[in-house]
Image (cartoon, rainbow, N blue to C red; front, top):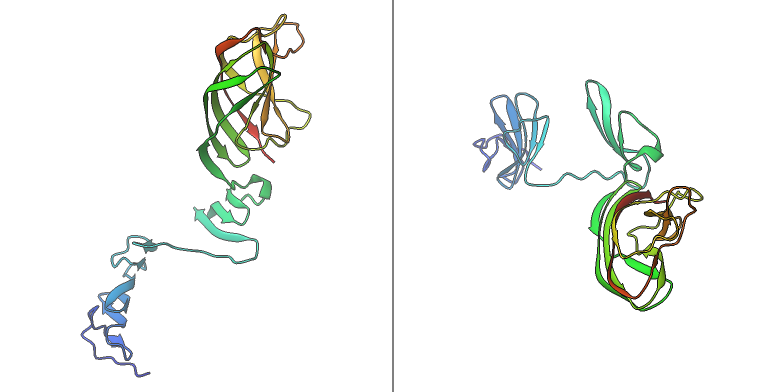
Length: 242
């Protein structure tokens, strides 16, 4: 291929080209641009700033009107390292996002998600009719933060066992039994000596087991004392996943 140095040094006709007259190098005052098809694609200015799709870059790398893609392929390791004051501030690697030079896979932030979910209630008997089943969640890494409201009717006396259909399976809580905060409840019997409605996340399933307790009392299974309508439980909490 013949290289020509006889263009008009414009984007339409760069100063140095090959056989294609509108593709080549265009020179300006202390800057150079790569031109294809008569359009400036990459510019290096007098400050050493590089613009891709931007002929007046304001940063060391300035990309406009497009995406940048980094593909490490099939190997594990670093993908993008961000440094400030000559030290690592953050890093994306195949584990996720890490901060301040951390290398531990367990400390990587590998997920963020927001959404809604539809809670359900498990009772010991009767016919349950759900009036309201509202839930939302935010998942950050392996921690799920959630909020819920259940309003339902039931046709007979029944024990209240579980809140079901949690958005993710509970994990990492075997034999520990932490639980949520119940902010309000209506028409629920807490049992002898019971003053507080609570419960615990059931490890390995998508469920919250309800319990009630009080001062110097054992935990009880809450119940519905009679057929009733608009029985309500509201709450929030957080739990870990595997």
